Length: 369
Image 1: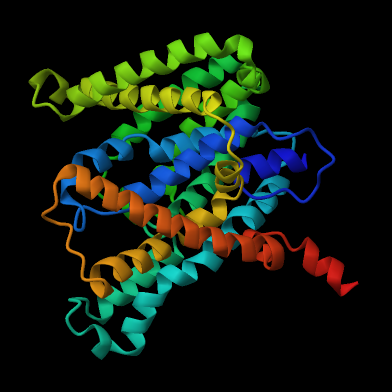
Image 2 (image 1 turned 180 degrees about the vertical axis):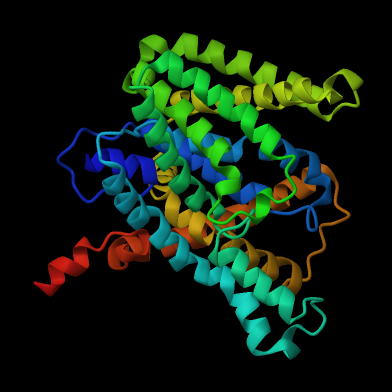
């Protein structure tokens, strides 16, 4: 049971009495976290990477949702699940959101520091409210999205009595509902990531279906390597083709239902390609650590990227805006690696001395006895 929770949340498990972790799942989360860092580089600093960043945004968070669903189960009561997930997701959300709140709070306390920032008091308060109530893409929105999505997934797993074909059809209907919901103007104003509830539930549900129907551990066996290579290559080809269709000016793909289908196939193909790749690459310990403790890396990624970019571009005086694609790609990788190294130091402190930051208060209870 502890193993399921640790895999689902991306935190280091305390107990070592359960089965060994499935390392390729941690590798997958590690790769997804790298994509999160890279995706947050921003076109302001790296305009030549706009196409690359757009491609990453077609699948990197759905990939995380799928990985978060692999070990989901509905054995708990709804109340038990809500309590456990609140500790493991919402406590870290608000603890790490302190970093995101630093700027708007500083603007509110000392507006003169940001007199050229363009935000009035109303805008600053709005930024704080958006983070506190987890609206739109504010701050660490993914954690609230997983929380609400897993609660709804629990409901539909129970309602369908875990009948996989029925559940799969319902999840596909959720994908359609999500595309339709994106057309609603007030979607991003909904609190607690309810605007993304169809997306998060659907992709975590797909991960759950895979976990229920496939032997995930066998995907590390050498005997299945060739089929996985074929799936990876085929999925990568489909991804490139459908990404081209998605970004082209083809009027056929501009028809709404077809456009939705193209986007969905693009996302699924990328997820399949990356997942199969992660079962084939060497199971590097450092990448497993990033995946295993992805919650911490996610919690500090934006702050660490800002530190590195400030050091390189403002203090160091580097100007990469006019650089060619290859040079910007190299510079982007340098920034990402630097930010991830800083995040690794924070993770080391959290895992050894502050596990309460990831919702684990067992050490505090133990020390108080």
